[in-house]
Length: 245
Image (cartoon, rainbow, N blue to C red):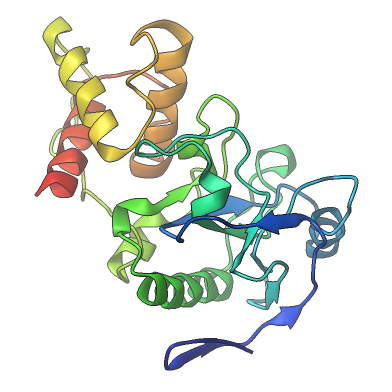
């Protein structure tokens, strides 16, 4: 049982040796899918010393929550990443692995009970560590050139409705027209305000495509094409305004 203030999370201990000392306060939650065929396969890998990867928690399909690394320690889940000026994301975050086959295994839907367990876990961590909603992110958002998880089937809107993370609402426009040239600079600044690493990439070509696609994977999951059209532009601006308000 992990106690957070007046709350508690029932967990099963499956401790990983893959961690080191944390030297900064916790200010982020990073959500992943395991991308493996079973919970046991994922647990074995996250506890394998040769794999050199881990997370703090794993939530399986039955809603069982496993504790792998104590929160006060630095788990190895983010890799090379960036969010809101921070590059050592492992040092300031709690990593939560969610059992799901991922894109390599057909990207199955997440079970309702599993998502409800993720929500409860995130709510308690968010409350205990005073984590800002803008700092609850997917792995793909902090490493858009490398990662796709937790994927476009992950129900971010459902989490936001329960106070976990942000959601800009439904798109204001169904238009798919290409935006005007001057709007590219606006979008780049807005993405930086949200937290993405848009400041140090040329806003054209493959780097832009990856970044836009990963924004869409969370906020426009039915339209993950990497194209900065009017609908995507509107969602970017709405989310940036929400964060800056």
